[in-house]
Image 1 (cartoon, rainbow over the protein chains, first blue to last red):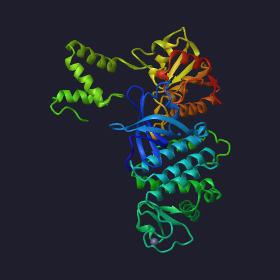
Image 2: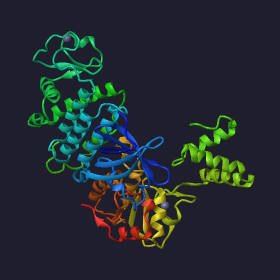
Image 3: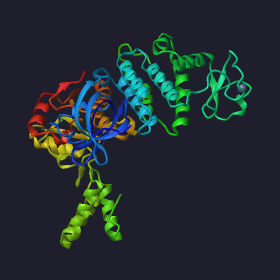
Image 4: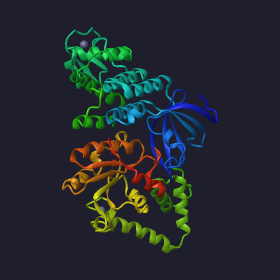
Length: 262
Length: 203
Ligand SMILES: [Zn+2]
Ligand SMILES: [Zn+2]
């Protein structure tokens, strides 16, 4: 899509990095232009009018002017700043994971409308939901589908026979579930419980409302997270860095904020 | 990076070295290089020596982790200061900004960074263990968390608050008034003084 010289767009701020004296480069995710980097001048100075409207995780309306290399933010007005995400480390750590994942999945200029809507819904859910980790699993499965990497969960990915109602295996490199007779022939696969398979199928084809009505106990949640994380690392060919901070908060078991069961 | 194709090897090398520095883009790197080319030799030599001296003589204070040429640093060695308060900052430059206000008389602790999960920077990469060690003897009664009022600074303050409160120390946060998204380093003295005076107990 050709962009006009000055254009206005909704965006979610994925990332920032310092630029020059007091500026920053902000990485924005937009519904129509996909992911783009833009220059925000002077935002590290306290008198900046832009700074508060371009913080990471902010859903914002920006006015961009095309520049020689990068576009320049001329105005910004926060639409949602997600204060409840920022005030709670558990929610915040998940939200940072969500924006990092979208960043990793999105080469510049790739299809973006559905990804944008999914990310926005994810941030809203993370700000309020009881089970923040289920919100992330729904995002992961959604991004995988939108990018054309949905894991094969309907039948065995190797022999294509239907799966027995018993424990199977999940093979990240194979791209899906392996039946008990194929599993020994594929390296790197791990046991997949029947319950985990059912929830993963629901994550893949159900609405978030349907998913959130399912009771997922911590053990089952961890199993699904392990399989999806292994698959994401395989697809993205790298770790999602923010996952380490989520793991640390769990390990240190700081505190569970009211209403969050994770 | 596009450098004048005719530029000699040493010139290209200096431009590239400048370009590695934070906040120096290709244009600035070229400007600095050509400035030095025209400058008197003594000036270039003084700069080179100053850089080497910093690397040879400057170390980190074993108490507050600030950069210093003596250990403990001047602030930590001072008997005039209030040893019951420690102000935690992200970078050495933040100490300069807070000292300019002349209204803070306690000690400091430099984290050398902030928690930034997306960049793979966790508490284990910061001087957090050193801070906990300092608080062990119970002489410090208040820790002021003076990380920047942006997402990563807030996350770091929240994390440290949870870590420190069980130790029985009073944990405070610089007051609002520092607009969100801004850097402490650029705040004017009056705003910083107000933020210090109006610091609040962290919930
Ligand atoms: Zn099979
Ligand atoms: Zn010191």
